[in-house]
Image (cartoon, rainbow over all chains, first blue to last red; front, top):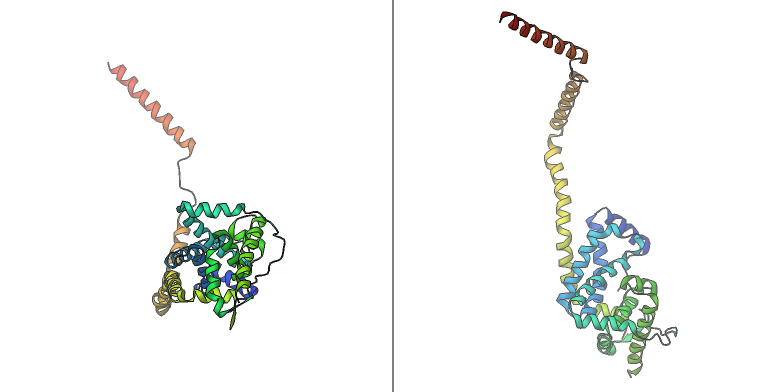
Length: 189
Length: 105
């Protein structure tokens, strides 16, 4: 599946969206909707709730486009709005919130060690189900970091911007998530 | 067959696309209608009788110009000196009347 518009085209679309051009908004939201939905759905593990949260994030985007400082950073900004919506949902559920908060305390360990799990890493069709199951088993914060890395190829800084946590925490979460996923993929025959 | 992790995740959630499309359209529809309605009003109300609207506009502009031309710049007020003179005269008259009344007694 293709990535969203190239940066120059994206910036031009965002500039038109700022002028409240419906066509530009339609293209922008259409290009991002599946990735944002996948992110939210994998976090909240509920399809209907995910649809509602994505819609709320899109409403936030339509209303708050004026707060976006750099047009080229529309994608992390939109993911940030979706992430905030997920957090608001988690805050209502005390157990989820506690789980989410505790994960930030994970030791960094060998976080500098390079564990590759880029968006273009190949997974066999027969391993797809196991991959999704393993992804679902990851703690929310690690899953969030991994999804942002895999879905949009965001840098550590961008993931930190989306999730509102320090870069070091993102690095640690991503390291643990990659290690868990890599373990699974290597275990597959 | 192998797929990238990104494609795998997106394909896993692709069944939500029709609902996402429907919600996106519903979200943007009121905006599109609002913008369209302004365009429709201009197109259907103004454009067919544009000469009449133009004539009315010119007539209103002329009336405004005439109105502003005919109104004096400052409202006329009696000068302060005239007011004081009138007050002094009123005072003198009142004193005369009182004096005449006293003399009559």
